[in-house]
Image (cartoon, rainbow, N blue to C red):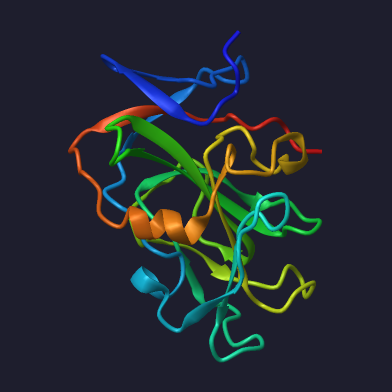
Length: 211
């Protein structure tokens, strides 16, 4: 049995095999390769925003982005896809999350040349502007900043995952760099990537059902 390890892809003709493949789903969709990544707010460089809360392993597993004007000044402000990808989740999961969009991206690692997958997560959205299965372009609007029904001051909770099985089941996975990227360093290191004008098949429907 192949362990559910970070998404390292082995490329074969017309087929992408994920190193963590399981019986959850054999479905794949062909998507364009990401040619780089930008910030999810104040595109492309997070202009007008600041990181109110950062990433740390076994603690806060993403970043919270706020408008520099403070308060709820960013309520309803646009949230963008950090790169080309496919929407693998777009719905209200309630509890502490509210509206959540997850986009799956495939890119070529600059150091190794290998194809890799990541999921970018956008939480506490006021509105969702995309549907599951939609192919997004870099910088495309996917939602707006919200408060999760007034639970928080308006902000974007943003994560980048190496493991494409996590979905909303964070408690079932390690809370460290084996599963997550620190978002800002990852984006800064991958602003411009090799662009390949073809679509690659990637696994979708990899999340277990939610309660």
